[in-house]
Image (cartoon, rainbow over all chains, first blue to last red; front, side, top):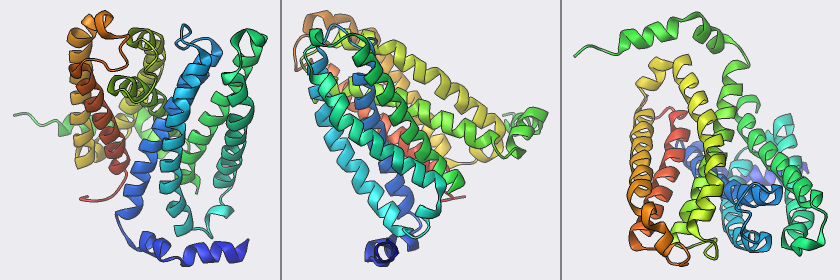
Amino acid sequence: MLPFLEWCEGLAVSQAYRESLWLFTLTQSLHLVAITTFIGAILIVDLRLLGWGPVRQSRAGMARSAQRILLWAGLAVLATGIPQFTANALSYPRSPVFVVKMCLLAAALVFTATVRRRVALADEGGLPSWVPRAVGAVSLALWMGVTIGGRLIAFYG
Amino acid sequence: MPSIIPALEWIEGLPWTTAIRESAWGYPIIETAHVASIVAFTGLVIMMDLRLVGLAFTHAPLTQIQRRLFPWQMAGLVPSTATGLLLCCVDPLRYYGNVFFRVKLVLLALAGVNALAFHLRTYRTARRWEDDPRVTSTARLAGAVSLLLWSAIIVSGRLIASNWFN
């Protein structure tokens, strides 16, 4: 792992990020806008799964429309997140908050792409009513955990 | 014109604002709650805006989405405003002198005016056009303006913590 982290830090991009006063801050600002859009698309479907959102709309329809936002906003989150990581690649893995955030992120992504996706797109009569509710609650907890973890990196980095 | 500075100094000197400022946990907890509730509130506002500009949820009638999302938007707005005011009280002089803080306040006011104008005028006639995937041009404009303003609010909020122009 160490050679990879060293390679990350040695990249020209990483160097530019470490030396620039505004590049890092500006990237973080865009990271936040992308995250907010991403979480909005997560929330609207989670609320629907919990039975609190726009319930007259089909679950699958909402989920499919949200999926496109998740994809585009997710790409923007990644694009703005990766240079932040590579710039200080060697120090982040030593931060417990960063490690927890990334583990939560991995769990949230896997859950969203598998269980949540299948339940959201499933036939609405075909599942007992507690299933979508439980899935919505787990998704909400995971993604809010990722968001909060991300903010805390800056405090306890 | 009387200066606001003595009032800010008084707030900054209060025992409870001093206690929060000097505690190790106070500021991070409030700040994190501020960010989390902003993400929830603004995220749902952005979903509504994307519906307005016709980029998402176009199959759903506008008023239905808005009516069902509104309580949750408020559930994000109330704590984000409360934590925001609290943060202001903890370090009022620093924020008062910060250019991005001032920009953020102006943008918030503009976003408020945009939302109010939309609800008082455009939204009133929503029943006539809400089923249309492509809503009226005024409504699309309101959505686009809101998207721009809220993105700029998030960016300026982040920039308050930067030390440019300080």
